[in-house]
Image (cartoon, rainbow, N blue to C red; front, side, top):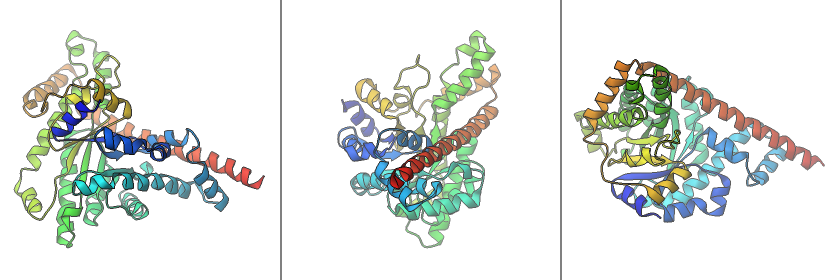
Amino acid sequence: MSENLKKLSDEGVSIWLDDISRERLRSGGLASLVKDKHVVGVTSNPTIFAKALSKGSAYDEQVRDLAVRGVDVEEASRAITTYDIRWGCDVLRPVYDRTEGLDGRVSIEVDPRLARDTEKTVAEARALWWLVDRPNLFIKIPATEEGLPAITRALAEGISVNVTLIFSLERYGKVIDAFLAGLEQARDNGRDLTRLASVASFFVSRVDTEIDKRLDKIGSAEAKALRSKAGLANARLAYALYEEKFGTDRWKSLKDAGARPQRPLWASTGVKDPDLPDTLYVDELVAPGTVNTMPEATLEAEADHGRVAGDTVRGSYDGARAHMAALKDAGVDYDDVVRVLEDEGVEKFEASWKELLGTIARELEDKAEGARA
């Protein structure tokens, strides 16, 4: 079952799980995936936590204690989520040690309601870094315009960062620049660059969803022929930009000081269109030095029937550029697509965060009533 995942790992792709829950941690499910399915990292987001809190009884004891103490919803949310992240970091710590800090990472996101506020994002990143207190933690900061300086400041202070919600090539270039600036400041501040790490989460399937919707609206045969290819083309061009940016003298000086590159991470790799192969965004984005974070269903599909046939990114750049040009000719406005996707991404995570807070509020009230009875 794991032969395909081993091949993927051997090609230089780090396999991360896009999920965490108290039940998965308590049952040993995460540890089993690390042991048997080549999983070497974990990502989380507000949607994942909202889902975890709405199922089962794994959180009941902690929620009851929080209720008895009279903790408010905001504090309770931090207590609950950081508990899971600390536990996840401990499960992945052997991987972190074995890979000398390359993998074994667990990500937690800043409050998505702060995505348009630099100062509050930095303050939140510091708070989460302190609360979790694990060297293999990543703080997820969205790649909004306001998030870019927060990325630099967090890294400069020695906080490892997973930059999330990247859709456009232009913004990805700015994310890399923010990373380089952060490392330069960290170096100038005397920090050990070998302990700092970062990934840049480039979203894939959502690009196809939005562009395919627009192609369907155009309705021509030429437009329909372009469906379901933009996500891969966009990601492949992101890798080309990664190679370019990390081939400069600016990067070399940081590398000589012990820094590691900010690895591209393929996110949103679960296929949304049922007519597409369910391993599309894994098999077609194989390149060295990347991370692919997968929902468990995608991970299991890849283990069962994935087709890992070597590097499927380098050498594809001309075709990717031609496809993006064809989309423009067909009437698809790329800049508008990525703007809409970023706005929707922030809104969806904010909605999930509010859902999480609502769930916790109800649970606190129920447990408080039970304690009074």
